[in-house]
Image 1 (tube, rainbow, N blue to C red):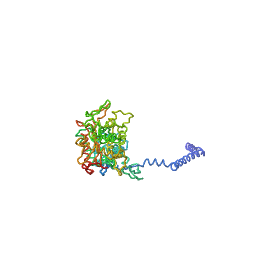
Image 2 (image 1 turned 180 degrees about the vertical axis):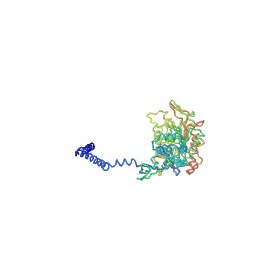
Image 3 (image 1 turned 135 degrees about the vertical axis):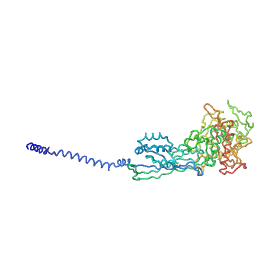
Image 4 (image 1 turned 90 degrees about the vertical axis):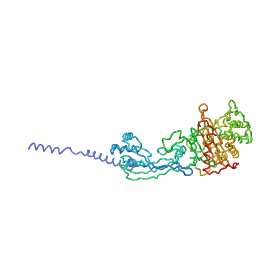
Length: 579
């Protein structure tokens, strides 16, 4: 009992404990209230003073913007024939996180089937998914055809999905490949018309904003912006003439044979380009066929010394300055050699001792035009060259166009003045040469060339005397006369055709090599000019390499077909030129 009583006393003492301290209680309550008011202040700051950040953080975790791709604009020729269209395809993508969350790559047969249909290496596909197992999106294949996409969908593999996109298709294939160009995997133009007018052809994709939960399910549609399709583009090209020109160019490469053949045709009344082709070409629908030497649009990129094709403009300058008239006789040495300083100028064809300027053009006499050039200031010839566009772009506004080399010297030697008259010392592109003859065919009215169909004819600028221009057209008509013209192979039955042939050696480091450029350029019909054409044969092989032998027959075939397609009336029975 004593022990029990003693224990009871101790318990009573412990229960009395330490006396209550008010100041300690006040401090604790103060801290609690301070924390409480701090939380209220923070909540007020977040909710009232800075709500945007909280909303932004929430939206970053739940809002998603889904792009709805728009179709690229259609490219068509002047008659509405489609040259480039967009077709719907699918992209196959993978979500590796989702894949490994649902069993990974255990079902080997189904994954092998996916690799086979996408033409992928089986082992590389599995290794790539394994390597990117922490990523949520990777492309497996782009621009997959609908049947392949349906097969992928039926495999029902976890983490494998499809995304709608479009692919560019070119119905004309290799016929217009260098001109139209092509697009990349993301639908933007990489070459030709596709690149030049990429901004016009590319539409604005639609945007759909949605809110998703943690499992990726759409729980709310926030907004939707409609897609804006790309604008259509109507070219000046006539695909019927384009096809004829390409077939002739392709045959020329094989039959001559030659490294390449380039052809361009324009409407002299409007400056519109009706055809522009190059052979060899490539299939723009096959990415494996895109080799650099095939892809180059040589009509606007390749430069060459124009040779005898500039002679009509030298004769024009001589007539304009009164140096000669159409009846003046010019002395031509029968030795076919004419010495200028230490150099000797040679004629290929034999010509009469006394020849008119028309006969000089018909026989393409280097000696004759050299004498004309030496009889007048070189600035006058350069001025005529400038007027017809030898020193500037053609106005076609295609990416990749070059402008050749236009001489700009303070002092000219006699031999420099002489060779300038028959096309050496200056370089042009085929499109520049076509521009000059388009101006000549329009009786001296210079208009920029256009690859787009024009609604209204550009008035143009009168840069040549129309009366003299008509005389020059009649003179180059004699070049197709079989009785003595060097370009008689360019003649077209039923039509009066004026042409000028040319041949020039290819320049190499330190001089000239053994390869040639051969070309023929012309206008038809002479009585009422409608078309101008240039044909350039690059590096013809074999014994025939003159422009009149290799390029003129191609011109005859293409120009004759174009005149018939356009229903241009034959004018072989007429004797004069329109006034």
